[in-house]
Image (cartoon, rainbow, N blue to C red; front, side, top):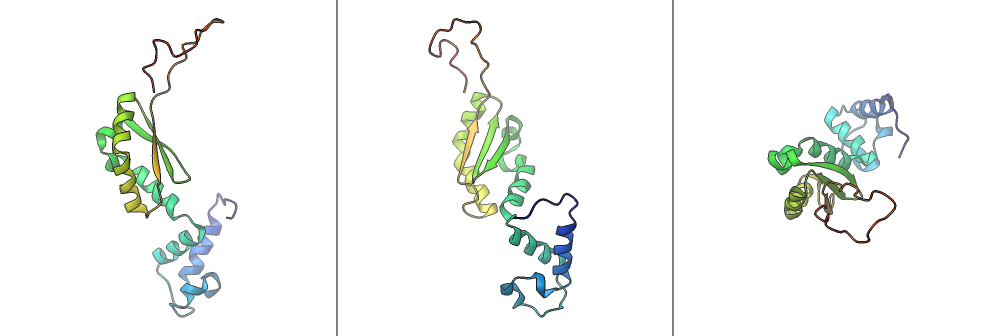
Length: 153
């Protein structure tokens, strides 16, 4: 993959060359489907660039995460936010243990919806994290074990 071009000029050149029908910039499989020099719709040219660069899943994830409310419902979205997506694993951060437990129960349905919209295998599992517990260890002497404050997580 190429280095990131913050100006976006390289991406614009790639899309423009495909929209003009430039056969040098189109892979051989797709070049057979049209005549050299034929104009290409801009959305088709952009789709080719996205496919060639391997951006499809990442763009789909970003689009879905922007519509997080629609995906999990407004009530769940109010209490949980997506934290990261890496190696087909989506991590969600809930604002309480109760909401984390609730989202863990519907995690398979969320995975199914994501895979339906992005393609099978885009999300293999969801990790739901609850709030971070405060540190109760103060001072030099600490009793081993969780103690009475074991209601977090």
